[in-house]
Length: 171
Image (cartoon, rainbow, N blue to C red; front, side, top):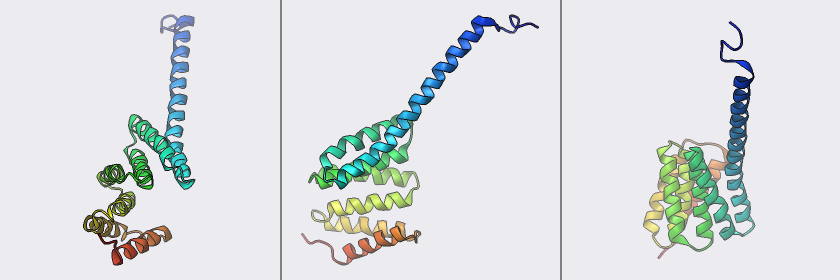
């Protein structure tokens, strides 16, 4: 069987090359989108650390949208969590609580106890003055979720939660 009988030849080869080239461009584009979505969360964190909470919202929300399109609900929830913390820092508590609830629910649905605990801690901090009872419930749940983690960061987060539970804000 020669090349023409197998559907080969210059024309078929050219089509295959074109398809591979297109697929290669798609992979490169996807790889850039994944990197962009990932680094937008880091940019949001840096913007918040520099006191630019409002500016970080665009980074977090763009990251969340990209992760949704890429099918990565875990990182999408991390972007929501960052946005929630940025809203809190910008004094927009209602929006902060909504984003943090969404992040915590997503982490919980994914079985990610560590990030669920961090989101609940941030949510409790957001609600502490307006609704201390609900804040205490969220801190208690975060503390329970962190019980299985014994690394230094978990110990610091737990200690902070313990302090807030021992001396909660009053209305």
